[in-house]
Structures are given as C-alpha cells and as structure tokens.
Length: 396
Image 1 (cartoon, rainbow, N blue to C red):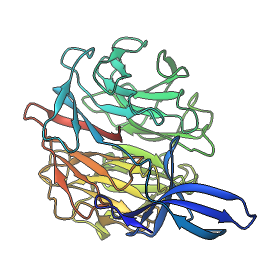
Image 2 (image 1 turned 135 degrees about the vertical axis):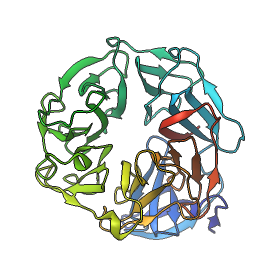
Image 3 (image 1 turned 180 degrees about the vertical axis):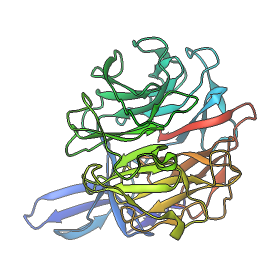
C-alpha cells in the first residue's frame, strides 16, 4: 500500500525489500511524482537522491512509522533590523536578538548539515553561532571588524567551515566554528573599483575533491583554489574589463559532475566544466524576460537541479526564481504566479524535504512552496526588515 502525501507531490513509503542475495533490507523512501525521482530517507543525512527498486525482487509497503521531517523553520537575514525566524505554519515572525551585536547587519546564514539547531550567521562584526535554533547566539573567536558575507560547510566534514568577507579574505575553522584562522586574501588586480571593498559573496567546494574550491567576488569575478583555500587564482578569461560579468553574486558546484561550477552575475548564470579555465553563458534570455542574477544554488538532494535568483537589476521591482533540472542546459520560471515586487536575493531548499523551497526579495518578501513549485505561500517580513540578503530553512 502506498500513501500519497497531501503536503508533498510525493509518495511516502517505508519499504521492506528482498535483495537478489536473499538479504532482507528495510529502507524509507520519498518518491517525487513530478520528476520521477526517488530519495532515500536516513536519520543521519536526510534525503539523498538514489535509484529506486534497482536490484530488488519484491517490495512490501508499510507507511506507518515513517521518520518524516517535522515543522519547517525559516530564517531570514537583513542589513536593516537583523535576523528573523518563522515556523512555516505560523503567521508571526520572531526577531532573534539575544547575543547578537547591536543593529546587526545579517548577510549570510548557514545551518549545520547534521544538527538543525546549530546555526551560523554572518554580520558586520564577524560570525555568530547559535546551538539552540536561534534562541540565543554567541560571537565566535575571530578578529574584530570582519564583515562576513558568505559561510560554507566542508561537504564531507561539518566541523570544517569557511567564511568569505569584505576585503576578499577567506577564514577557516576546523573545530565547528569556535575558532577561526585567516587562510588567504584573494587579490584580483583587475577588480572593478566600487564604493565598497571587493567581497566574497559565495564559496563553492567540490564534494569529490574538496581541495578544489571557488569564490564569487563582488566585483572581481571568479577565483579558484586547488589546495583547500590556501592559494587562489583568478579565472576570468571571458570577463576581464566587463563590470556586468565581473559582478559576481554567487557560486555553486554541480555535484553530479564535480568539474561543473556555476556562477551568477548581472547577465545571468554561467557554467564552467574545466574549473574556470573557460566559461559558457547559459543564456537566460532564452527562458526569462529578467536575467540579472543575485545568486545560484544547487539542490542538496538532487545535484542536477539548480535554482537562480533573478530580477531586472539590483533595485528593480521585479523578481523571481529560475530552475534547471539538467545542470543548467535549460531553465524555467519556478515561482509561477507569484510576481515578487523586488529582486530576489536568496533561495533555500530544505535538505530533509526537498519539495520545500523558500526565497526572499530585497524589500522583505518571502515566498515558499511545500510541493515543488505547484503552490506558493507568502510570508511577508515586518516593514523594518530592509535590504534582505539571506535565507535558510530546515526541519526541526
């Protein structure tokens, strides 16, 4: 017997399988009807894409007792008025201020991949950590005056974490965020001079080869490290001298093909299959009327799927999210029927429930789907939350 979830476009089953060897194995699965994709559900790693039914001779379905994700929590960071949290089903946003600096400017949020209560937040006064889901924070041990713009967990060791800052500095922690060491300063002599110092808006790491790292520089293009972040090379062959191309806002690595890296800039999303030696424009204009991209993310459960934040420009009154399910070859408008009133600045996928996707706009709108984009709900932030920069979500 198979039960269809009312909240997800999915089939939820607990399956007792008998392998051809005769060994009995019990596993939990989530099967997405919309994309015919299966995910194995584990307590340790959440949902992981896999091939269903391969090598099995018989299935018995026992939907009772599934260890499915609990309530969904959404975290949003703004340069004006700090950090907010909301339970998806609740109508109220909570401002999270205990232990945070005065007037926090929150530009990055990262949730520990194995502990949903451990949350890191990047601010104008360094990085802060919560171990209780955001009820309280403490400042981590790093030099004062660092404006943190990006946070990235090592894909294979969550005790190792990287930070990107204003001034193009890279910091690293190997003790779960308690202490931070300066690893490198990325220098691009051809960076476009702006009113602010060049800053790292995103860090990408190859899971299969974690010494291979990437950084998105605003406004300095792309950088590549082959030694775990100790040294960096600028990889801007197609971009030099063009501010629209050098103005990077995000980077992600396609896990299905570890040599594929994606960056976002004012013209859309670009892809390299040779670690930045060459870049190809993925031509958003073929798929959308708005191409300015403020970030690109890989789905944590389906490495073929990418999400890109879009708008007309930085301060536009249009926004949205584009999705690709084929590593960037084709794209579609994901947030159909939503019509955000400003440029989208962040998108987050719930790792334990990949049908849940949330995004935020610069002016404080938050939209979410629990069924892979079929339906959407609005979660508007309080008016004082301005210049929204970051979003994250998890199941508690």
